[in-house]
Each structure stands twice: as structure tokens, then as C-alpha cells.
Length: 158
Image (cartoon, rainbow, N blue to C red):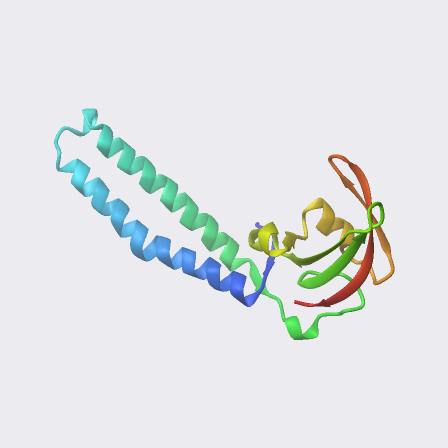
């Protein structure tokens, strides 16, 4: 049994699109590659055939994994988010107490994390440390370089 994952509408749409692409484009291509390699002769010494079969197996594993993730995916209702504490999809302004630097992050599911756009995973050290905190709280977060104290300055919706 796989764990339930929470997604934004955008994240769930991307998951569905990838699954559809793998099933409708890549699966037929893998079958065609196998048929083409099979036509080249003796299968016992046909490396192209072996490679095509292996690629198909990897593709089917990826499809099965995505189907499992999709079946356990839940859409988060962003309109009912509690803004009194940090939760999944909270946009959080934090202040590093050591250097006074302020940062903005949105906490998202692991599959939607993208540091370049300010989206961090709730399973990351910072994400875990911020969950459940309220404005004014100080989160002590252990990272590889030590412990950092972040003050929660603001919590808003994405």
C-alpha cells in the first residue's frame, strides 16, 4: 500500500499528463521498436531486441508506479486552508535569525517541489521544521551544516 500524496490542481494535472503521454505515445513506440528489432533476425543474438525489451520493461514499471501514485493522489482544497499555522500549500515568509535574511517558500508535496520557484517539499528538513508553526514561532531546523533558527513572519495562501 502506497502512501497518500497531496497535490495542487496543477501538480495533479502534470501527473495525469505524464501518465497519458507514457501510455499513448511511449508504449506504442516501445512495441514498434520491439517489432522492428524482431524483424532483424535471430533473437538469441539480437542485442537490439534485448535492449528494446528492457526499455519496454522499464517503461511499464514507470507506468505502474505513476498509476499507483495517481490512485493514491488527493487534491487539496486550497479555499479551506487554515492560515493560522503552516500546512501543505501555505506560503510562508521566514526570517533567518542569524543573518536577518527573509525568504518566501510555498510548502508543496514532494513531487511538486522546485526550489527555483520557491516551492519546497513538506518532507524536506526545512518543510518538516515549519509544519504546524504559527506566525511569531521560531523553528529550529537541523540541516547538514548545523541548526538554523527561522522565525515565521507571515503565512498566506499560495
